[in-house]
Image (cartoon, rainbow, N blue to C red; front, top):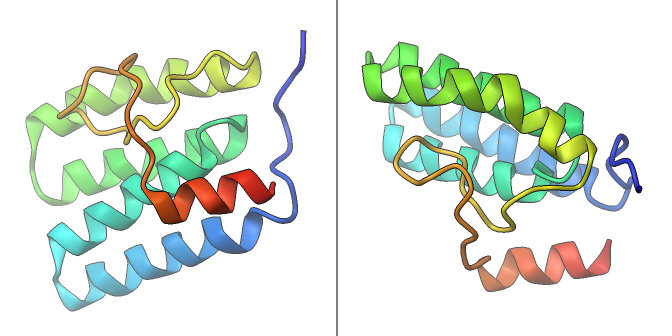
Length: 120
């Protein structure tokens, strides 16, 4: 069994860029734009335990910030289980990570992210 612990160094800049963009959009008050950046970071990082868990923590914090009970309640189990599923390589590829989609649903990956992930 392959264990997915450490994100490849080739992906780290893209993951960090999405998180930086998330913070920038959040500071501007652009909640929709901020959320989209979190979803993109989730797609990039979902295969690796630490990054996957970190994005779900940010999604939980976002849910708290916008006072969305649905997002808060949706992120708690994802935070507890999502990282473990990453660790053993059992993730729904392309899933954006929010409570607005089923946690095990595979989803289409945007073209630009497909290219980034293919390089890794």
